[in-house]
Image (tube, rainbow over all chains, first blue to last red; front, side, top):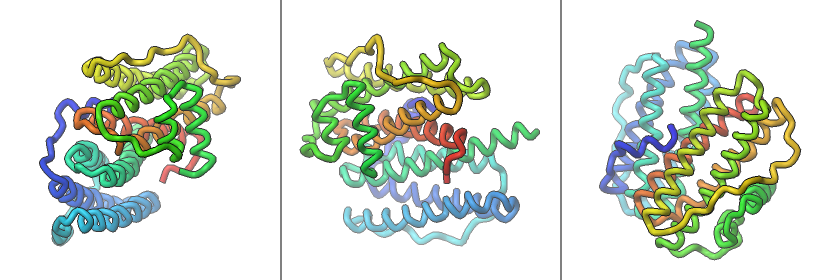
Length: 141
Length: 172
């Protein structure tokens, strides 16, 4: 990636917009992972680990919204059917990583930057695991 | 940051020549840095110093064939990332009228052993870089550098995760 993501970065206007976007993208990743876990049993440990990280992140973001006096996260709608494509999962996960990175400058609060940067570290780790998974699948042919 | 890891990050950063004020932030012992251009330049200099160190280590590893042969492509990719991080941050320093720290001709990287032992050494440098960027990022004042630092941190996590996987360590 090599910092190249800055070339066409989304310019977020507010912390609320950043947090709403992260909530939406995270729910998309969760839906895709759940579909994959149902289809690919060996994926369940990874999916459970990501789900635990996301649950922890949601709690922390909710607390951040309260501290910044922002509205609570929009209620999640019913889960949408998601496919089991690893490439689509990777794309969704990359969008989540980019939303964290591109959102940091809009937060205007050092503690919020620290928190979402640490969540971004988890998200980037998840993205790399997905990359390694895809590489392994490709090698298996 | 656990005490042992904090000590390790400080040792790597200190050996690489990071400024005392920034070392204080990394060690959790220094005063809170006032946000502004001066702090940004201190962080940029520290980051460039760490990138020089990482580039040196990867360069030695590639030149002497210390990476396991199947992992050479990762090493080349990661060295390229570190060179990109260096160039990005040097450009930001120069745009602001500062002078970036130059690479040393040599670094104390200890006794280097080929194979998994060298991958462990690369992992240690990546952990130090990731910990340093994670500790410093909330002290950055300007939007352009904060955005660049965020994407650099994403790269460092990728490097760290790949090397952990190679060494059979937990990645999730």
